[in-house]
Image 1: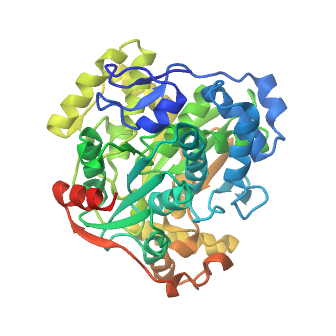
Image 2 (image 1 turned 180 degrees about the vertical axis):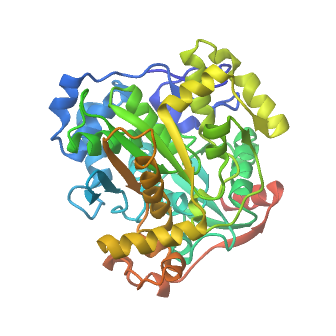
Length: 468
């Protein structure tokens, strides 16, 4: 399998090269040159597979023969042995046709464990073979950082630097990062917002001279391995509900950087019968404005109680633009469209491209007030305590079910984080605080270690350079 850049000027790479490369040399994002298609007969065979076995069957197409099958199965088993629920991604019924897919049973209680436990083990496998040292630099709006640290901290040949926006993540999220006291783990609290963190990471990718010859590797969702790993739970949950060529499902995804829902889009292209992919956002609604009005204009970020979705631009959206243009055989226009967006902060796509995207997606914006009401409602109705991101998703699912788009299919809302990670949101809903799992019960008494740095590229580069 070869992977190509969305901007078409960088060399094509194999899987091993892609996970170490992250951002393409032309500034684009890597995507597979083609996607395997699974027919209904094959999907029927897979419907009762365990999560690790299904993961192997879905992702082996992207790996080709770069990792021997026995080694690859061991990597997968190791990655998902850290999850506390036997099903790994259990489904819970909320209403007659509405289900919750619980993606928070990993070691850091967020959906990002699905990709980052895997990515850490794959990196470790290749680093041992290469006898190479790397520097992992990541930006987090909350969950990526802790999931990345816990996924990669045992990579002996990796040093990990994670930037989070200072005082703009929940205390649980911060402590899940800053209480990991290891010689190869460094937490940076940047005086800025998440987009500032992400922009610094992108600039450091463009100039790695400060890393003393070591290679920088991305753990953010620009790394295709993260997208690939998340494809699996779309298949797993849909097949558990009997999804087939005659029986579609729809998915609602609390969305920020667009990586998670893009994985669902790839699952659909690979043959999973998904009717609609429903984008659920908070008040930072650039994706809703695009779907509804073909208006992808960068605006000031609004602080909300769902911090993992507080974004100005969705970093994976470029992948969808490329795929949609490719459907009309004009993917060569992607670089021009992206460069215009980088210059002006705004883009709209040709009408026929926008219509193509609207066939697959719909979108809803949910503000903080509605989020609190959603948390209250589901607690009263089902005794489920939802984290604010998941509460946004469930309300978007309700709106979809009440819309003309809905055709009676099962709707699966992705539950992206454990509610105990967001105590202030639960408190606002006047609900008793859910307890952290036993393995995190002493989180608030553990010592922390992090450095507060100015939002300045040279200051951050010097900090990293002095630590490696």
